[in-house]
Length: 249
Image 1 (tube, rainbow, N blue to C red):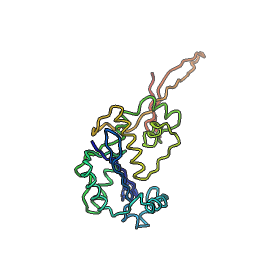
Image 2 (tube, helix red, strand yellow):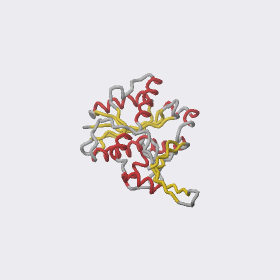
Image 3 (cartoon, rainbow, N blue to C red):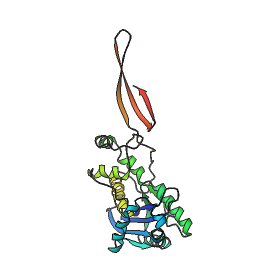
């Protein structure tokens, strides 16, 4: 059974013009990569004013080097989509995966509408790898890993970004996500295959949790008017960066 793991890099969230598309077609049973492709989208690349607004635009030099060494190909968005469709047919791809897939799915919808071309995922089910990670990786050991290394969200909950999860499954706390499409697809492939090896079913939509709450057990000590001491155990849970829920035990 063959699947594809894909990723996109865009100029913004609200108007996500895509400047980098990468995908990795994988044989599930063996974990073998059958095909890897990495594209720079020509229309955005040749629009300097648009590209300079892009996330990680400082990586432009990296893309230049990749194209010069022919590791990355520059093509128009419509050609990339047609090539993806042919690859999916040639390799009998039965499912697509991305980390935080609603974003990448939306990127293809937006750009395919903008450029008036066929979306390669119109007839392909897309599954969120983050849901796989929440179900098959995020456990008490993972939470301890986050506690030991300080991997938390802005609201104080446990981080489950691809970078954090990859650090956990590899034990490499020095790993830094590249934030280029093919490179990110490769680490997300490793996360997905790790989940499959641990019991996840292929082409299954697992629940993506809004956040992984961080519960902190604390003790509140009060003194009464007679000088007596009273202790109360409670759990502190961050709802967001401005609000905490307190529960007496």
